[in-house]
Amino acid sequence: MKILITGGAGFIGSNFVRFVLSRYPGYEVVNLDSLTYAGNLENLRDLEENDRHTFVKGDICDMTLLESLRFDSIIHFAAESHVDRSILDSSPFLRTNIGGTKNLLDLAKTRGLRMLHVSTDEVYGSISEGLFTEASPLSPNSPYAASKASSDLFVRAYHETYGVDAVITRCSNNYGPFQFPEKLIPLMIINALASKPLPVYGDGRNVRDWIHVLDHCRAVDMVFHKGRAGEVYNIGGRNEQQNIDIVSRILSSVSDVTGSDIAGLNGLITYVKDRPGHDRRYAIDPSKIESELGWRPTVGFENGIAETVRWYVGNRDWWGRITSGQYMKYYDVQYGRRLS
Ligand code: NAD
Ligand code: TYD
Image (cartoon, rainbow, N blue to C red; front, side, top):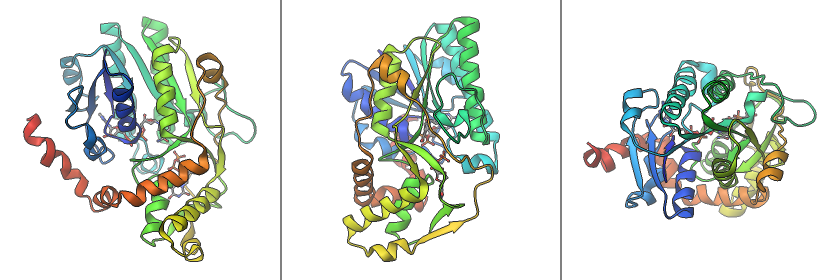
């Protein structure tokens, strides 16, 4: 089996590429990533000598490039993924998340391939009580969520119209190693380590359901192999947390690991102007994947956060090269000559 994995130099994609290669010794991965600001080949450093992993620097919007690649199935992570950026400029979200997904669907259709489309719980919008199921209406509120909902609808339409063997996963907020430090958890960790302000939007009481990235990877693997074509599977940790509680938990882990004074760390919390259209609460019901495929999250939140804090403490070089912009050069230095 040779799988095309898109976005495999990003946070979840790089964790998934590593997961698949170690779990399936017979599988090969073609990892297609255009290396936007969020793509970082350092995330894949340990796979440089792995001859079952082929990295291709390229854009999912480039149909000619896609047609030149050979593989048996598609797992599609590539996306513009940050809500705040989508509020500033939604154009790249429309291009990649909708246009790029449509290109991959065309390939899956022409070649008769299975395609797993990685989506998000944000397509359902905000919910004040109860849980979103797969049957809940799509009601996206941010430009990011609107672009993901649109791509989900294209996947559905290609299944209904052309019989494409496609499945969709909708996961809640991920955390863990290699997450780009623009998202809540890594940003709070590295700012705390650098004694910088910790910007909490609004009243800090917005709720997200958090899941460790490896539990998400295990779920994607199960849906890819066993999910029914045309179906949607919610993936969630049954772990709702208010943002301010997450920040407090992070600070207590940072204090434990580094010995920093907890009062000083708490003093870094800075309430800032709220995000426009900020969804109050995300909460999804993962019963379908639990009962149909037997998936369960395995990483407890307290341990998961503590381990993630230790990872960022132990990998200051990794995020230091991101904050300095140096990481952008890694591709040219390590790969430029080899791939050109
Ligand atoms: P990320 O921003 O860390 O990584 C995205 C990757 O896609 C980057 O490596 C980037 O270079 C690549 N990419 C972007 N545009 C591309 C293009 N046009 N062609 C090829 N590659 C391109 O994102 P992530 O957090 O790893 O999210 C991965 C997927 O999971 C996304 O589809 C996202 O919507 C979805 N998702 C994320 C979360 C989360 O909490 N992070 C939750 C649910 C779903
Ligand atoms: P984020 O990690 O951007 O994920 P998403 O918006 O896709 O859920 O944000 C998670 C929550 O944390 C969200 O409610 C916004 C909030 N947040 C802050 O309060 N401060 C920050 O600096 C960031 C990046 C997010």
